[in-house]
Length: 413
Image 1 (cartoon, rainbow, N blue to C red):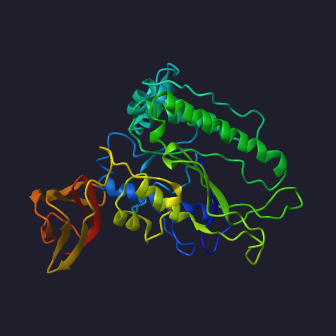
Image 2 (cartoon, helix red, strand yellow):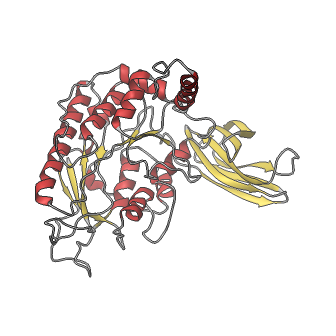
């Protein structure tokens, strides 16, 4: 375990909703971005997600349905969302959310069966989740909170996630939601309980993963929209603050300790909140590059700018068959003129290349090239003067060296 102290961002926003979006989008506090940092990366991997999704969900989140973390630039959420752990467990156990058998034998029952069948069909990943869940069992001493401020059971969430990981689902990103930390009142009575259930269940989670031999493959990271104020309020709690600790768990950290210095109660802003020392986006960028093994240039593209990495986290990229950095990132751009779009790209080494164009709904429009190409700069042309194409937004996709790159283009008639 490592704790990064004094985490925040410039011009801290103390609104739950706005600050939550800032953390999810990794944008500056004065920039509104409706896409999420992980959604932008997933969009690079699956540009045709809307109509040709991968076999397993790219991400799963339990609760926190309002988060834009996994939303791509087209405002499509690329995660599978379960409102609560019970809903995800129901899908995992049965391969569907709603029972189509236990209905009354009447016209209403027929209509209910139809509606439930349609609803079940929207869970395109239900069967793969059920298969993974059924292929494993839990082996951790999870402890569900009783009469605690936690309204969402972290034990149930982590137990389901552990089974999906051990069962080989293949989803690389999971988000669980833990509430109760908005301790405006009675903090001294509430906070110890919150931390206890977090601690005991993270421990159980890693014990569970270890029983399946996959504990070394999993990194956990906490985040919240803001910290707490230094001074206690009249309700024996603390109000919204700025800098806060961020906790990380897993053997990939290569040790224990603290990062980011100690909180300095004398170093405060104009309203008395702790000053941040570590921009949270530095942590994101480090995790993307040093844990998910994403190329440096693509990390900076996903983050919207370059953030200094945090080698103190101890993360080391160990590429596997599922890594996305077998080759350096390629550079690409669209050039416009004379009723056509020229797609230009530079290959760092010889490799197989496939270039396709999709419409905004992800439907294939045209394959522009497929084959082996040499190192260097290449161009392909997409003409807009074909009668079957209408003016509008399209997306080109370049698959090269095991990676997929994409960008929107505009056709004018």
